[in-house]
Amino acid sequence: MGVRVIIPTPLRVYAGKRDSTEVKAATVGEALGRLTTEFGDLRKHLFTEDGKLRSFVNVYVNDEDIRYLAKENTPTKDGDTISIVPSIAGGIDLACCSCWV
Amino acid sequence: MASGPTLKISAEIAQRIREHGAQSYPNECCGALLGRDADASVGTTGAGVTLPAREILALFPLVNRREDSPRNRFSVTAEDVRDAEKAGQEKGLDVVGWYHSHPDHPARPSQYDREHAWPWYSYIIVSVANGKPQEMTSWRLSDDRSDYACEEIAIRDSAVR
Image 1: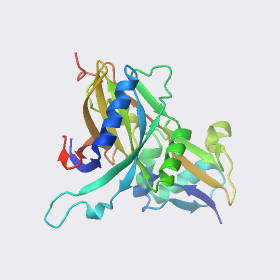
Image 2: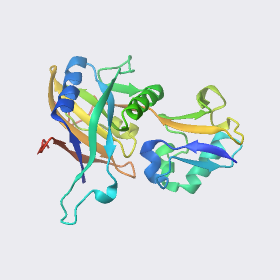
Image 3: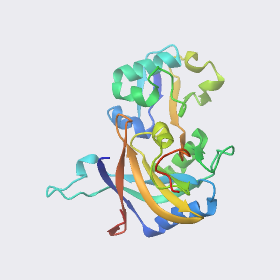
Image 4: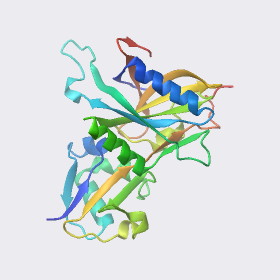
């Protein structure tokens, strides 16, 4: 038994259409590292180019947001569930050149 | 931009998105698109005719959480996403995308939209000019996050773009 990682719907296509996978990991960072090693196409959607978790990627360990724990150093143990949950954002570029005048 | 698949939507749901955009003006509106996604393998027929790959069957309107700058930003929290997914599951549907409005701006994804987008989801944008809904478009982020593909919106039997 390892740590179960639940993959959000928009990323399942990059993970062999799986909704979850199991990894051996002692921290959240290690689990996400193993996940993106197994499914390399997930990396650019979860992490920025300098390796930081994207701001709209939310990670929970057993329903606790890791931002309120030890972030990616949050410890994990066999039987834990890590959920990756999207948040959604967008809007207008006020300085964009194609805007209406 | 590359051409993408077709997004099927009823006239009633399309109208509700436009109305939400108008009601929220001058702020941005947002909400979840609940529906079904056809398997990619049935995206085209043997004759090369494109079939609707995704159908929107219900909406889950949300409150724009960006209270600091709601006129040019929208935000859907992880809790809202979970609520939308739960609402979809109760109807036997998935969250297949999101909609938002661009007040007094075209229905084109901004750089900010692209930087914050997820792949796979359909992103419907409705432009609202002086409180009146205008063009509505749908987009999907490319696999490498570099661009958006325009997704044709098919309202009942007639395509609007």
